[in-house]
Length: 254
Image (cartoon, rainbow, N blue to C red):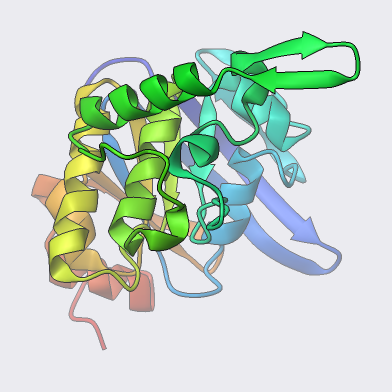
C-alpha cells in the first residue's frame, strides 16, 4: 500500500519515573488494513494502546493524524478523532440490553433534552443497533436481550459493530479472541475483515499468532519497549513471528 498513513507514531517514548516502558517507537497505521501488534507480556503493548486511547501521554515523540501533529489529552479527545479501543473487558455492562450497550456513552445522540430530564428515543436506538449489527454480518433480532445472555463472541461483535457504526477510523482490539471457542473466534475474525472492508484501520493486539496471521496485512512486534520489526504478512512466517516475540530477532523461537 502506498497511501498516506492515517496515523504515524514518531519516536514515541514513555517513562513512568525511572521505568522506561516505550523506547523510540516508530509505526504507521493505514486505513483499510489490519495491523497485528504482537509482543510478550510486559513488552509495552498496553502502554502503547493507552497512548493511542488518550489515557497516557508520551514522554517524548509525536502523534501525526492525517498529516497533522496532534495530542490526545483524554480518552474523549481520542474518541472525537475517531479512535475506538475495545479492551478485553469490552466496556460493556452485562445487565443492560444490547441496544443500551450499543449507545453507551453516546446517549446524547439519541435523546431529547428537557429541563432536568433526558428522554431516550428507544425505538430509534433499537432500529439503529439492529441495522448496524446486520451491516457487519451479525444477526441478532432481539436487541432487548441483556448482554449477560450473550456468548463471548457475540459480546465482541457488539463492541466492534458499535465502533464501526460511530465512524471510528481507527479500531484497536485488545485480545478480541481470548477465551473464545474456535467457532466464535472465526466469527470475530470475520467481523475484523468486514471492518477492514469498510475502510477502517484496525490494530489487532493478540498473543495468538495463528489468529493474527489469518487476518493481518502487516505485523509490528514489540520487544522490551521497542519495535523489533515491522513486516508484511507475505514476508514473514509464523515461526519467525514467534522468534521475534521471544527473542527480538528472526530465527527459531526458543
